[in-house]
Image (cartoon, rainbow, N blue to C red; front, side, top):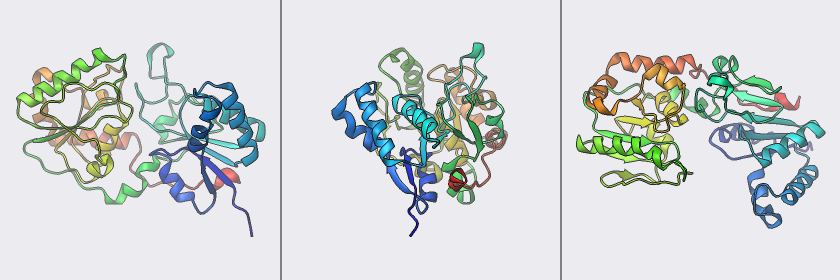
Length: 316
């Protein structure tokens, strides 16, 4: 009987579909769980002793593939060192749209989002391949794993004559971001005054919570089901990839740049919601021209095609 190789992984919305498609070919082991358990050897992620123990466990397990998201941190560095020394495939999956338009030269003065060191970088489309900073990794054009199972089941855009219910999906506000809540608060106050049904789903890593009087917090909302079922008339978000998800599932969306992020493709394709003239902007959003702009963004990013999530080619 042939022994299946080990695939070491992190559980993330972008890796889960890949794991589901490869579960029969590998033994799946979560490195998140191992790293948490090793807190007994050092509570911080920067603990050198904890890192040494983790590296020793990698040598013991001898995984043939490590599947991670594009993240910079202690574990990512350990994985890269291990992959180089033991000729293991380290696959980093693009997990977001990123501030400024993904990991690219789009930022002014060379300020781009850093890419994790890896042997293979799983990217979504040709557009991203043309701009990505590869750090010597092999770029693998594999599409967005999250969308594979939804491609044929997406609903068409609903014909809406008047927006009533609005779901706001802000990227996380950290402790030092208090001043960035001003635009969020202004938006909420304006929409409440105009009588809209308001709902908000905060990012799991959110630390700051504004005054939420008159707005329903959807802590347990299954965002992808809500977007796929088009449960809300309008989705408002900032540079989060969740806004891209909302567009993909043919929801009406509006971009509101709570964090004042530069050079976003959302702003380029859709413009930014103007709180001062919000009633006019919301009327424009339901127009057929605006819907076409959303469809153009999805097509531009090449996200309308089904892709093969198999990892066997990396072993071979």
